[in-house]
Length: 625
View 1 (cartoon, rainbow, N blue to C red):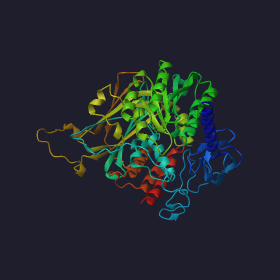
View 2: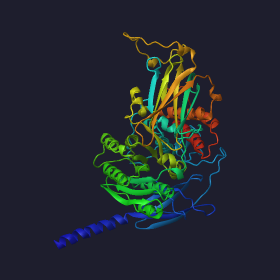
View 3: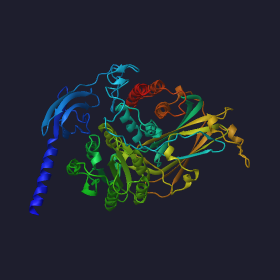
View 4: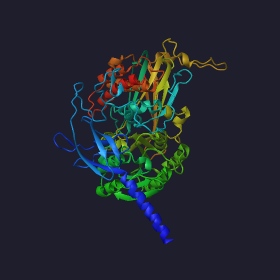
């Protein structure tokens, strides 16, 4: 028996040595031209899933377990030229390199962009380059290396149709402050390919941006904004623009936080843009914690476990050390992790505090409960405990967008996709209050259109947030949450009731047993719609009602606000990506023109980044034909 065990041990040792000899290490430092470290730079070994982000103060990085071979190394950092070099990885060796990045100079636009940056370099639309027709920065029109399979999952989205105001005057939906779709679409475009049509959720693209809405007054948690103007993609139609501005609560006034980080450390999280990026993103969040906050860390792979007991936010070194020690490997028992995280959050519940589970994953659950239905039921059973859920998506190739969106929706939470450190900064530094602190829950909107002035209407986006008309007054019906300082924007395309024929695809036969009469006052009033809102306090069970009326107007698009014009440009971009039948006269050139004229102050550069993305997409759309 002893000899048998020794033989097994010898085989295992030999296997380990052979395995170790098949890999090498890349170690280096990333500096700018002045010798200063470039924090946040991404380093990727092309042809492998290996990579990392520069997070050390001296600009150093290390990439372990790189398979032996010859590779291209690509380094990206916002504001710097892309850096490329060839590198050879030898068995058991460490390759040490020094990388110096050169700052970008652009003749086209002096605006500094604080987000993922896309430029069409040395490439004219329709002209062949080294990367193919319309290729971006040498990338082929596919973000997936040869031999890798794309198992990403997106729910099918059917664009909302036009409804007749005479027979269906009520439009009811839940608000949506999720922004995952925009950064996910950006990831595809940055990678040199057009996104899948169902990855484009129009309302999430629109709501990625903040708008200049009036601040709420008094005790109301949000202020309401409305506007009407001509529709840019169909001059015979009009656009109704509705906006909500959440009250901005200073961080020092936010109640103490009871946060539980739930981190996926399964084998699918090994890639450079998954667990390494999760660690860097959560480190940003930890730096914002106050002494009165507390954090626990749970993980899951083949099983779930507690890595860090609930720890005061002042002990940042201890919390960060627990995050940094995490490594990926194993299968994915996501449901077990969710159960454990909620149990830990409930055990440490702060009455009147900000209790939240923050899940970081690619959504690829494959052990135990994994179906969308079972998972969402499990989340629903726990949301009445006063615990909110934030879902953070990472990675590509096996990304499960549809699953994570459902979890956030059912868990009284929000959902974001983090494709780089600048997006992590946007969420955990610039918009931390909105990310972590809910000021109103179960926020619903119901609009009654005046059939005397509106022939047909169409809600743009929010396809998976639609509610039945009776759900509006049902306080048991779940709806969306509004965070501190968040803005919410919704657009309706309407066909005025001026004798036009409307849309031929939306005709029904006349009713046989009843007729619908319109109040005579409907033709003489200037009220085009009545807008109603319901919401609950974060810990409330009974909703409150707000009612506003919207006056008709014949404003030209050029005379409308930057809010409406920029939101319209984003809407057109989304329709073009989705190949929507409602796209009308929209073109990428029109989107660029409209967005450029409505860029405004753009302090963080997000709108300038959007314009660059549209320019890149225009080139890609030609390449894909």
